[in-house]
Amino acid sequence: MQLCHTSRATSAVFDDPNLVSSAGLVPVLALARSAGLGELTQQHLTVPTDKGANAGLKVTSLVAGMVAGADSIDDMALLRHGGMGRVFANAYAPSTLGSFLRTFSFGHVRQLDAVASRFLTRLAVQAPLVAPTTDPSVRVMVDIDDTIIEVHGYAKQGSGYGYSGVRGLNALLATVSTSNSAPVVVAQRLRKGSCGSPRGAARLVADALKTIGSLSSATSLVRADSAFYGHPTVGAAIRAGADVSVTVRMDPKVKAAIASIGDDAWTPIEYTDAVFDEQTQTWVSRAEVAEIGFTAFTSKKLAEQVPGRLVVRRIPDLNPAGKNGQPTLFDTWRFHAFFTTTDPAAADTVAADKTHRGHAIIEQVHADLKHSALAHLPSGKFTANAAWLVLAVMAFNLTRAAALLTGPALAKATTATIRRKLITVPARVASSARRVTLHLPAAWPWETAWTALFDRVSDPPAAIAS
Image (cartoon, rainbow, N blue to C red; front, side, top):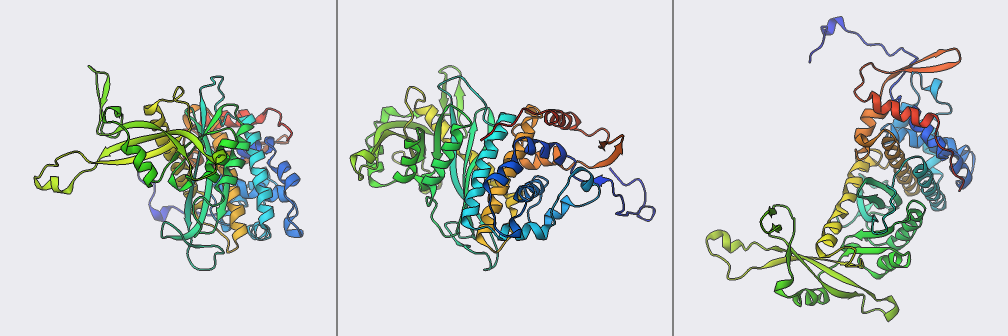
């Protein structure tokens, strides 16, 4: 590929008032409107003073900017160029949106959380965000984990050095997914950078499972790493009727339970470099799993103790001396254990281990958000950044819902891919006979997907009241 003309024969002028850079916002905002984003915001968000006026329009502007790729307040200017004013009304200036966010208190952030959960529920009416099922054995996976959003300088309220050694703020997320659907975020909370991972996790799990109850009737399985292995978080999930699958810390009680597992109880599993033996129909693997009955939190009173299963995966621990030609006298192992309350009839040892390892899917959500709206936390005020996180989650879920309406090809794509193929599509706005027509590029590779989305939201299902 090369230029058709020399640089001297090429010029550029920013003078076309009819061009837009993100034509995909037209069907996406139609989807947001049908799901009641502006209406829900006006109903549940009450930011004081003139800065909080028209909260529905301001929240919609912020979400739209994030869907189009904005990761800072200044980036919201991309909503005010060319022909955007001919297809969108009331796109606020970045300075106005910044003032709006800085007016938030913690209570207003919680109000925005309520908007986000209701908006997700309504989006699920428009698009199958959580794949429906009639099979009672199928469960929805609820993953909880936190991540550090790096910041620089000392002006950010609440920033600090946490477990990662990076200065930042701590975002705690809960996602829901199934084997047939990509994850969406059902609950979120911004915390100071130096806080411990489980802080506030019990409340977040309760909020997440309450929202999931309106999305799916299937049983939920809450997955988490060892930082969340504690009675408050596990107890919150159990009380909400969910099962848990949580990595445990290698304390003396867990080590004693692992030591009591017999040598003949271990089963090879499909793991990294495993090979399937056709003759024996088994996996030849260096990783093995076994399980034993286990009661968690025995130091608590009897009502707070949780019976379940301890599933253990062991991997050979390579002896450095063996590299020098001296073989080991016996195998040594590294153990990874997790506690689960799932019924053995629904998931045996091997299946439970494979399901638990799927918890890593939440890392993809963290990476996705950090490569879009959470690339920065734009304000020095903590509550403004907390509101920014909620808005980023709403933009993430809205983008995911839009992709689902185009068909299976983009159903599990990252939001960056969806943005490139569906959102940031240039178009020229033309008017004729009181109708607006968007002229998009000829031979656009994803024309079919874009048209499918546009057609679906032109006559969407009626929004439900909440």
